[in-house]
Length: 462
Image 1 (cartoon, rainbow, N blue to C red):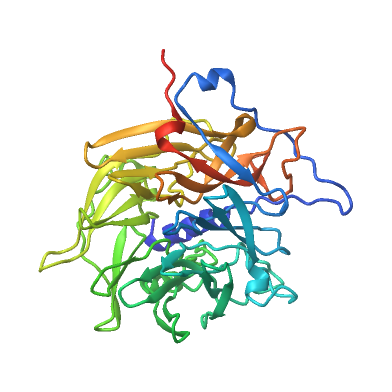
Image 2 (image 1 turned 120 degrees about the vertical axis):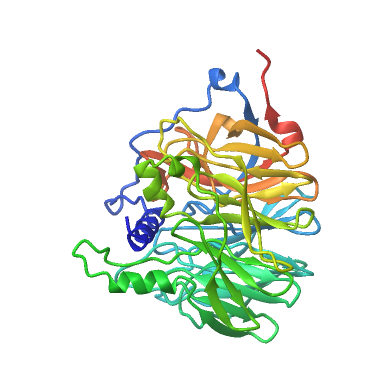
């Protein structure tokens, strides 16, 4: 399979996230085909995580969340929640750790000045949020394409964490969604990778000036344009899902095929692919045809800088392998080391690789893999000091509701984990049910979830 076709297949798969909509006759309430069974007593006899949550029932159109979360210096958690309704904007919230409650902060459409416009909604904060002093920075993105209403572009946002005021710093000059956002704390600069054009941009929040630096996936786009085969995909979707910034100001990313690394060097203003030794996965080394095809689609997700080991920790999308990425330093070329297989295998719901979660508490890395539509989310950890891997089992919230997917995770100062999770709706309750909030035939709704690993990880005795 060609790299270009692989990239397009990856994009097609990602494009399907959250887009399971069903036609509903106007004036009639939507009724799901089925409800997912609750977490049973038999299930509870196996390792699991008994978390607690806050509902978001006042916003029934919300359907999930992708990465937009941060726990600040005071332990509060700021997070966005998304919608794919085509009419409603995403919402921004704050979890007040002292009051133990969730407060609504802003409607993203109103914050961006588009609440009363006919533009497609600002569906989500897909990239990470970043704290710097009293400021929280981030960017907005669309949730899905609306054929007759072109998206007008994402906005750069600054939240005053003292007052909760959201400042619109401006519309991206790319007129595209800010899919992935990173922050250079040394130079106080924001970097973004756009959703459909795949442009790398740099934004200075102090001056509100933005510059397009180039297109890291340009080689993939050029190869796609040169492909004259009749079966050539109709479009290419250059979605970069991680950006890594080092102290010297260089920006690193990863793309297909086979975890190809690229680097933007501000000294030369060039984007170039890196020569990196990437260990092939075992199934690729064995020559498995399906694995080879999937390897062509693979990149890295969820990068996390670790000052102790002087490397980025990341999840390889091919097989959910925890890896270390060492950028070039002191004359040494960049390299990748595999650390620990993560993820879930041998499940009945298919595979969904590399959810947008990877955080560290002390020397322990936490990750929340999920099994696919209709399945469950587990909490997993790897202790870097003792080299110990633990699968803590599926996550469950109040009412024995199962967590289906989790696309965000933040580490609080108090040793707790914060997330916005897709939770299966339960029949006979006031859980929101809408046609776009489905996994398989089962309805779900988002909740703000709190996990205290020291207390909530249940390991029943035999």
